[in-house]
Length: 162
Image 1 (cartoon, one colour):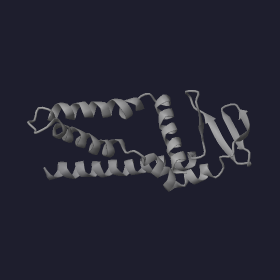
Image 2 (tube, one colour):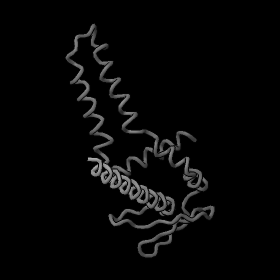
Image 3 (cartoon, helix red, strand yellow):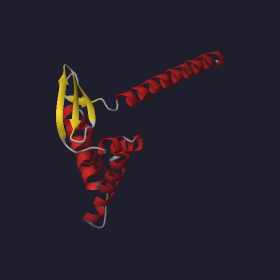
Image 4 (cartoon, helix red, strand yellow):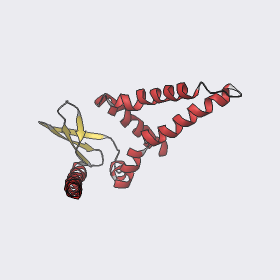
């Protein structure tokens, strides 16, 4: 089952690159650039052997790749939210598709219904998780307003102290 989930995760990430080409920068170009940067930075140091000379750039790149690229974070988040269980519940195959304008419903052989919506770029996406994501976005907006008010209070207090 883990290999199957990994395949879905890789497929999802590749589709993400196709849907949002700027993701190519973060998934391919940035790692290659970091590796080239660290190799150039540490290649001039005197070392005993070529293998020793490669430890620093490879080690630095490896550590930063994990920290910056966060592999599997999307999968862990989906698992934590219960989305994987919800999608895994019924992978029996498509029985029928109902399309009505910009909305569609896919019904599986077992009768589970998955809602979809056409995005402005023409690609269909599931709306199964829209409510949770909207709630999260609204909470983030409230948090931002709170932080901005606190920053304004701090600036006012700092200007009075002068």
